Length: 640
Image 1 (spheres, rainbow, N blue to C red):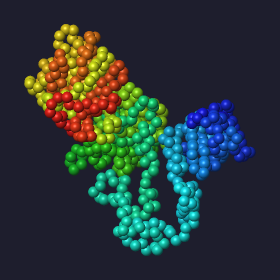
Image 2 (cartoon, rainbow, N blue to C red):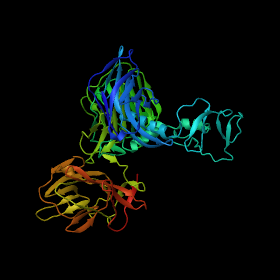
Image 3 (tube, rainbow, N blue to C red):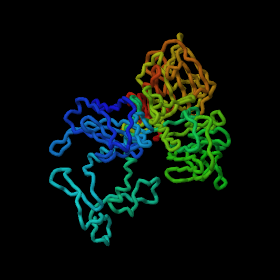
């Protein structure tokens, strides 16, 4: 085996399988090759125990001596190995280069160790945690070592020049307004010093991040800090090692026709954790399963469900768990509220936790194995998709099978801005296996902007998208009409050209052009007459040549037709109205979202917002452009 370091990249070259008796030598030896970037540096090898995400102490487990790496052959299991080279001048680190970590598996057998560079089951997240913790140790200014009761003292006036020393007479630092009884304590009197330690009050909701009033020492305060949670937040904020060109979004949301096939058939011993919004189906309540599979009436893996039970003689939406049978709890579920849910379906141990609180336990024994794949947003029921579609939001999902993390699903947009989940364990992208399109929550609006549910026009406002369509341009728009009558114009978007040759472009309207007629879609000489009469404030989705599919699609496939072959009209596409020969007519409607595509890529994603001055607008998360009302009056809106 050889370790090859080219600048900050580490690779492993497997020359042969190597074996040594653990009882006859102290170290396992491997070659290491450095390029010129490493000349003149002090070089250290680092080994991370990936199972625990903690680096071994320096000098423990691995060492670099004269272009050789020596590994302590008493170590076994899964590890990440990397190298650090640095310069120190006047006790200050002036230069450092650090490689990536390569995963290695050490299998300790009877009297020998086998070393292989095959990647073990180690997640990038575990390696990431190890790197960050090592970096925090490196630059925290706190030297390693010390014993119980010792304190850091200054050795000189130089910053960071400290050492551990025995200090007598100080056992604790006490914060409070009452004098401590132990005279050896350092007392910070809160009557004299402004100390800001947050308190927990009974009025707070989800207040697990606050500190109890009883926690009144600095040591306990620091013990309450959740370093792993902070690092995970940083990891998620940075996109968590998504492929190049992918963008992390807040969530994916179904509309009743989309689902994700997770690509595996679960068996007893599965645990899942995720964040979801509650979803209440119209009464009588059925069962909606965000994640699960049902092979038969006695073979269920519904990691949790939204269903109903009778509480105080009222049919009430609650959480449920499915393992061999359904078990519904008395935990009331609110529509649209975000919940963090953890569940386990093990032999003799089933539980359901919501926001960290255990709401259900069960001890059904026996092992079962599904005969169909597990899904998100629905489930297979006896071999077919269930009717209980989940139309809520999924923010993330993690799944363990037999104590091994097998899925770490992150909602994102791919390089073509298509909504999907990316699995950080298997480096695989999962797309909608159903029809229609996921709604997604973007986190990419400017920090000073406020996200809105929709913008609403009163018949005098419109948006000029500045987009001139081609024959390959497509559109997907979610909208509703405010007023249904024979007077209100129905033209919602696009260009109408009623003369031959018909070159209507991304045109949404009705058969008569008024809102009391059935919806019609027009594009390049073809009309889709849906037969659907509009209902005031009901949301509809329309796609015209979306992702260049040559289809007119109303309400997620309720009505479809093929796009014509005529040309398009070369004028700007407007929203909240129609362009007929350059003359605009406006409608009264709400637009919830609007996206444009070119060929098979999404090129514009308009989301309703308030800008930094609380002016209603559409913000394009792809082009980073803001679009304002070009008409008169003002859009109304609803803030999310």
